[in-house]
Length: 455
Image (cartoon, rainbow, N blue to C red):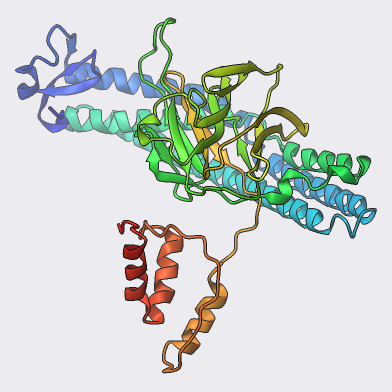
């Protein structure tokens, strides 16, 4: 039964919620401890006062966060300019041979700069908003104290609990920004990788990241506990609210990528620093959906590199290989379908952590797994290795020229869309073009012919 503060008569100390007469008649709060609403309000006000007092010195400690952000941004620009010049210099030595390689490296650098810049700007905005919010909450706390004897205790309790939650959130924020640091590890790792290419002979080329792919998580092929971001590039798993015994471990939760590959070379990177227990690999097309809660690599149709609380192992067919000590934060995956190989790289060092040979000739899907500790959240993120672009931009322009024409037209193009998912943003744009060319019914007929379900 949902508690109703305005009809509350007592407060449950065990459940931390107000109780109405109806609540007291149920078994939910049997043998719990109760206090009066007035005492609950007093306790809540005392608690938020304590939190507010504890928060004040933390706010003072980070009063200089704005100049730190400005300095970090300048450092980002300086490091970016320095590394970009170095990369250009390195590639001049092998300009003809490394033309494509150089372009991809620049794309990664631009993407990382943009990401870090956005993070610093967002931190600056958040800090300013929290300062304003704190001033407003200080006034609200004062007003609540003045209304203790005149306003309904249930209403006061509800307001004070909301303030309590806001202050706790604010405390977490200021605890995390004691010192603003610029992390240029990914860009420095990129320069190191480029230097190694120059130091090696031509037999080293091509490098895996020349085959960079933009992969996305498939919302339709994931464990029910996993949460996928709007852009389908991040996945998170919230741990249990109850700590497990030492003998028990949390289950694995898997998700598959939308894309699959059965020929050529392909490469993608995963940021794994957001979890101590993760697995990244590939699964065969026939890998069943009921496998979404079992560990990767424990059957003949999956290959994976797994981190179990930091201990790295490689798994396939329920056989494991221990990996030397490694604190991988960004993992690179290179899939060579033609040679039936998959290699896992530590991006920071460029070292190969493990290789699998003899993969299936069937289409292979990138696969991922998470396991979260109790009262914590684990996450994986697909690294952006290619600049975002509108693959339909040219066709949008051309469709406006042909939509009112009686002449026959030929559409030539290679589109990567979720044909079975009409809610996908890319699919929506493609369908809009088809509709403008009066080809929508033909598209539906093609789906029926190919036995592709329409959602």
